[in-house]
Image 1 (cartoon, rainbow, N blue to C red):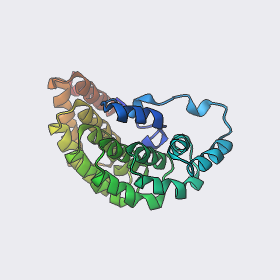
Image 2 (cartoon, rainbow, N blue to C red):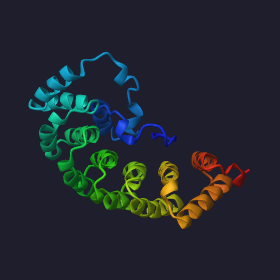
Image 3 (cartoon, helix red, strand yellow):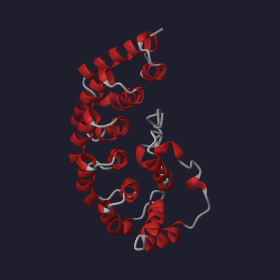
Image 4 (cartoon, rainbow, N blue to C red):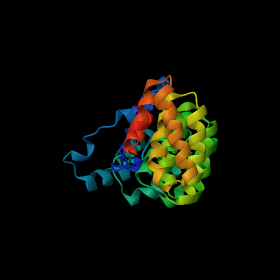
Length: 255
């Protein structure tokens, strides 16, 4: 899995992304999640971040190759000066550049970007761009992102559903109302989605939202996890359900 299973650990907003890895994936059209390629030591490197960002701002004004390199830096670091330069790149014809700009705006959440990001999730014809958007929208607590993420979890391809299900944990935690709306679709997808990774992410997200859910949703989640832990044919989903039950102090439900 590509997410944090411990609710006390960093949120999706803390994940760094390498645009070069994304570009290679896009060219090959493979189904490996780009966030598997995170450089875990990136923040421990002895870099002058301000200088790096200064250079990246110049790169964002250059040619395509320079812009891609600048986007790499803003996928790692936060700097509000990047906002006016990142936003226009969401309209670039090159999907690698759009995708990289989307990830950079996930690391650098810009309130004025949310409408465009929602539009990309709904309408972009490239699944890698939509997948990037599903990840990035986790870092925006604007109410308008909830419904598009729910719709993506219902209707999009597996890679986009995977990150929509994870992002719903972040957006669901914004309010009790959001939690119930997110949980409703997460429970449905947990039961019917044909991709084990999506179902595992639904369990993880519901576990993150558990304390905010009403009694009916809590009971439904525990019941479904118990069934999965006892009878599911997918070992990875079964283990995720057991982990969720363990975290809620319900080991006895499947032993």
